[in-house]
Length: 178
Ligand code: 5GP
Image (tube, rainbow, N blue to C red):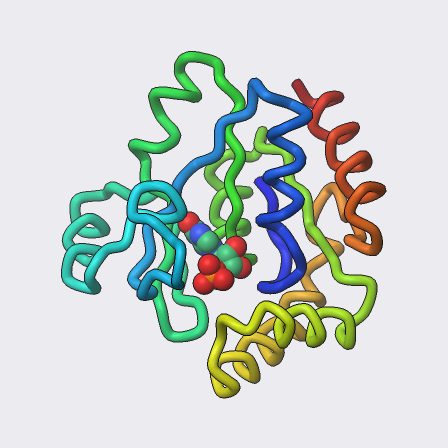
């Protein structure tokens, strides 16, 4: 599983990782957040209403779930189970609270924390992405400060200073675990 603050570049790193380690499959999370322009249901996320999310939670459909910046996110059991049973390695991109739950329930999972070179760099990235409202961005930065404190909990920490270098480090970690 890949965790780290929002805006640190987890998505970009994972796309490059999967290109280099094609046997990896990426779990599609569920969220109650509205789709951003260009995001497709079932591809980027399974977009659920809060009521649908609650119903699936009550049915025990989630491996982990968390509230992040006012919206809910979770990993569906259905995304994981068949692949894990078939021995296929699955990548989860999740925030810290979810990562902690996965660490408890699946201690064998490879745990990687992606860290920004600095909080300033993270702010610049979030601004550059331009997909969050100023209020949401402030909340994400506040959360990011707290999330940074969690880095030492994770077995591997990759600093996303330069994309190519960070991807190479991530590929090495993943390959040695497979
Ligand atoms: P975003 O709204 O930017 O797509 O995601 C916000 C945060 O939620 C990111 O840190 C992202 O990694 C995290 N996230 C995405 N999917 C999941 C999930 O299934 N579970 C948890 N716990 N966090 C998720």
